[in-house]
View 1: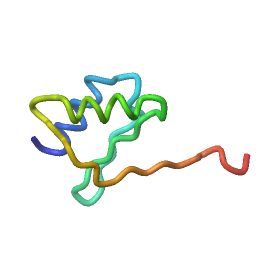
View 2: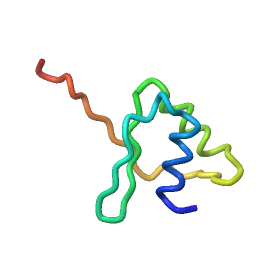
View 3: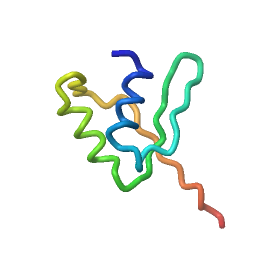
Length: 67
């Protein structure tokens, strides 16, 4: 499955948790609200058409720092 199709599937399954889908130089990123990261990762692992079993990158940003 293509990256954008996976991102769209995440958004369809978790519409209230996806903040944005971004594409840059052929890479697709899904920005999520912090409270539901674990259920999204479990869904990616357990969904038969995806079966993702390796986490390559996870990034967190505190946008409230210094306020």
